[in-house]
Image (cartoon, rainbow, N blue to C red):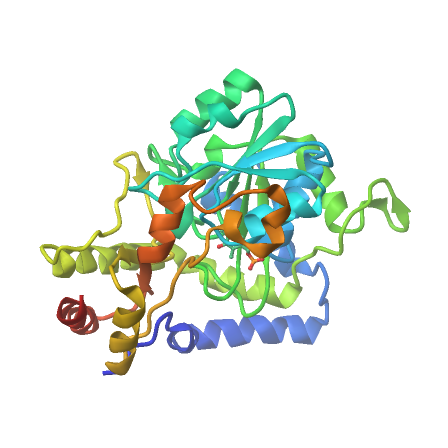
Length: 365
Ligand SMILES: *Cc1c(COP(=O)(O)O)cnc(C)c1O
């Protein structure tokens, strides 16, 4: 058997007629920048999430930049976040001249451990960025308490979690700004780069709309230093189609996760732990294994692709050497990055494929 990790081509074939039609409509109108489809997407994203303000943008990375620029994060500020995430979360903090301050993760959820945040707060701390890793929100109640006590902003990096809930509400409800990504491999992906920012406050949202177009408040008049950060009309048209099917995709992902849970239990593995208050969108289904490299090679020989998100925590990355962290500073992030392994995950994995993957994992661990 040969397993496809994300089945992106399969998904395209599934919605081909609708997607091709939507793309050709853009081509026929030639409104490539900020065409009607961009506003349509912002409206449908808003309906989907019940967010107050929705602004599409060029990527999940630029969404983080725009969000922090709107909050005026700058040199001298400290931003608390997790070292167990994709580089963009902390890279954007550093790009703005602010200092990423890492806090270790919870061993069960792999998200930032709120009980370790307070000891890292100083006079300079402005913001907490939590990351909903693999699609699951962090402990948002606990983060909210700290945010209120110290008067900090809270951004959720939801690049992997669009649609996830906490206490039966979209997690967007629990932060000042939520950012997401439409990178092809994310749960809601386009056919290139794209992203979105969701804000509570309308002044902040207006500022983000200006920052997205070079900080201009009218054409060629620039109130802020901004970005060329718009989402393409074509990409918006594609996400518009996919969003119509997204609720179904999410329940299929949940079903695949349930089937993995069933077939992999009693195999002496650490499976994903989902907090009772939360739902995950299962961007990834990641398990912990010893001797990961060996297991990955064996699975690959059987036609089963796997991936590692992420093999090196951010405090040990060369680009952050100037922060002065060393091995041992965040032991849980280091442990998990050595053992974590993502299995093929998409809405269309069949029960036969899942059984085949589970049987082979049992053989090789
Ligand atoms: C993918 C990802 C991003 C960046 O999104 P892009 O659209 O690729 O720029 C940021 N944060 C996290 C946690 C991600 O997984």
